[in-house]
Amino acid sequence: MSRDNNEAKLIFISEEQKQKLLEIQNEVSEHGGDISMNQLIRDAINILIDLYKSEIVKKYEPFRLETK
Image (cartoon, rainbow, N blue to C red; front, side):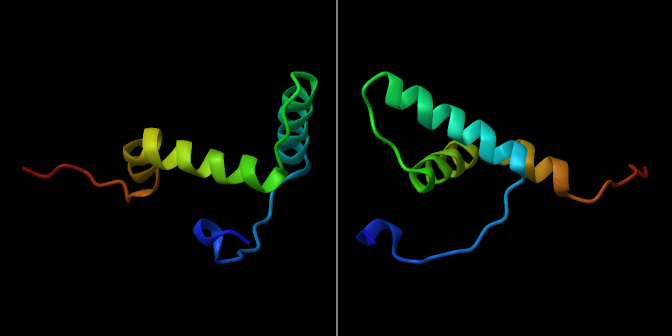
């Protein structure tokens, strides 16, 4: 395991998520590249953190009625 990825975590993904990741992996291969499923998952997490953090926080914070 590389220094940047030194903590193993077990995650559960649906069959549909797995298939979509495999499609991306196959497309990369068709273009002459090589990517592991683990790297695809790490990249997806980085995209989520970098681009969608505020949307995710809003989605999961409790709904509050404004009282004034």
